[in-house]
Image (tube, rainbow, N blue to C red):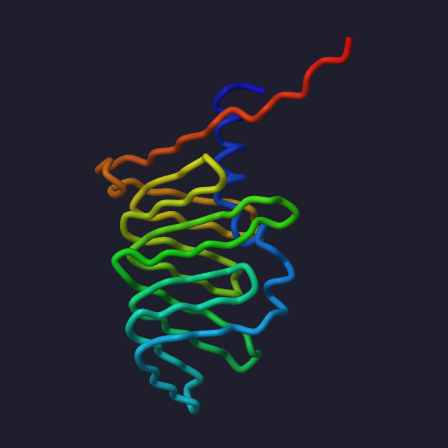
Amino acid sequence: MNKRANILLLTLLLVSLPALAEKADKGKPINIEADSVHMDEANKVAVYDGHVVLTQGTLTINAERIEIRQDDAGLTSGEAQGNPTHFRQKVEGKNEYAEGWAKRIEYDSRADKLRLVGEAHLKRGEDELRGNIITYDAKSASYQAQGGGGGTPGRVRAVIHPKAQPTAKP
């Protein structure tokens, strides 16, 4: 496999948060703490403001504001905003966490898409991906990163550490 294919594969593994997230988390209750909340039951929208902390299993999101919307089928989408907004979640089957920072984090459970906007930064283990916008589509297992943030204007930056190779048996 050539170097470019290796980098693409490793970077794809780095940003695969929705697909690799701890599966048990989806069945756990969502707990939210904030300074205030405004609930609009007719439109199925809740807006939490001020030092918001959302937890669900191993997932933690810290933001200044989180808006959660629910459709008629019960599927949820949401947006977290802050300077920065941060999430952390255990990776399925591994003793490691995926973390992300951005000015805004958007999630759409119907489309199974995660989008980090504004000085976006993803980290899994020692590997990192930075850009202005990072989008991950869990259904197609594809991602897109656009430059313009993260200290490298107009550029995307990836740091990929070599993985330990199995030793040959004598």
